[in-house]
Image (cartoon, rainbow, N blue to C red; front, side):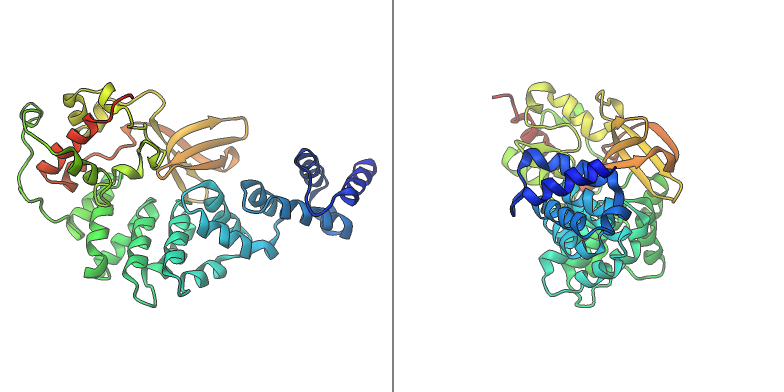
Length: 367
């Protein structure tokens, strides 16, 4: 240990303001092996740690180091990362570390700031943790003291990403606390979740408005014969209420969760496209089977199993966020026979919307 400490101090003394990339991994590894107690007790080691942090600002490595050494004095920087990266692991992990670093008050305060765009981004990052422990924070956005509609809608969308949050919205609906400003957003989100019991309650408490036709769609054989507008179908694909782009990418645009659709028109016939939308559980691609992981603290992660090691599981949840779960914290895990694509998407569009959407998907072919 003395040799390791000596080498570390020597290397640190030789460094200028910038740490060479080839030395960074060595420094991080040495500091990690020494551990928070030894590093925090030695001013020279603390200096080395701060040099490493400065060299890794804005990256996932920075977040990992702050977490490992429980550096609450870096909470403001984590907050900035969360706001700047709401839909990737740098931002989402920043929120998780903030909460473990007693940063809940900081998060709540940030949601009350004047900058509406930053508040919305932070709410998205918080929601992407899919943790029940975030409900009190997201409630600040839901009850936005400034009455900003888009902030409140963002809070609804984030709460609906995990079952405890969805249930919190339903509880509000029961007590008449879902006002007209956010009612359609709540109806859209809650009637499209994967939990059947939540959808059943939502259908009663916050039902979706009827489609223009108000009737069941025609059979697929009939839909195939009808004409559609691919340009209009593209707008349907990216429409907030239909939510296709929340899980699929087209030519790099959208969220990387489900299969990329940039060449789907080459791979599937019109009939298969209709079936995949109207009956997503009829055929699930290998590698896109859904898993549910429940933790002993009550959190639930639902999505794709990305890796399974001796110590951790990595689940990619809706939104494309990678969540590492310690196996020691898992209560149960199960593989579902259902697609990660929610059933009942047709309820979010008219029959002509569906026809236009399929016409657009048919144009997405291999170049």
